Image (cartoon, rainbow, N blue to C red; front, side):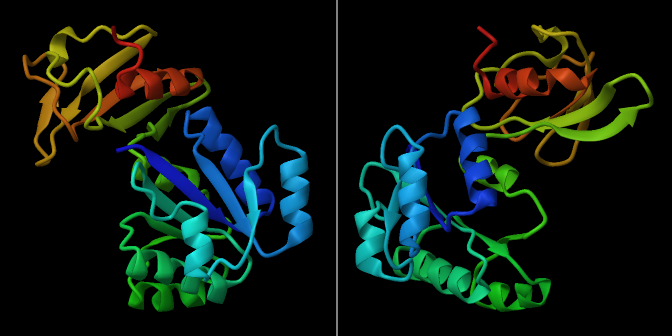
Length: 230
């Protein structure tokens, strides 16, 4: 099922997140905020209205912006500067609408246990990036840089194979990559390692280990998602 994303809170971080989501073709996104000036400013700068003025803890308002759409599965992301607002809005999204994909910024790390106690476990401290959690939640996996190869602009990377990847079923030893890279091997979902020379099929939730230039990060993401391997 397709995903729609509701971002609670308009600020520099949420605007940057929106641009990152668009870069990954996740464009069914709306903002909600109780500040009229912020809503009007964001809509003024957008081609179409993407921000809505209202109370983020009002079920009627949340339903108006699509938290319970029948044609899509909502991802709720709370990014306000107020941990109480983040917590209460996430509780409503999770408990009333039974969303499995609820993510929150936590402004003060002392409040993390409070979020956890209320079942909100996808948490990001204010200074951390939230994009990877959302992309993984939406079925997009990003390569993780494990180790830099000093002064060469090259790194060892790992990337998990998502369920929709078209390379599932391909022989690991015969995989052809459309950019310069060396495949070291894979680790399957049970933790078993395989060398790249072994004749084993690539499966969902495998982790591929690869050496490639840092500039190929976006190409890796697209290829292992299955969009460039035809």
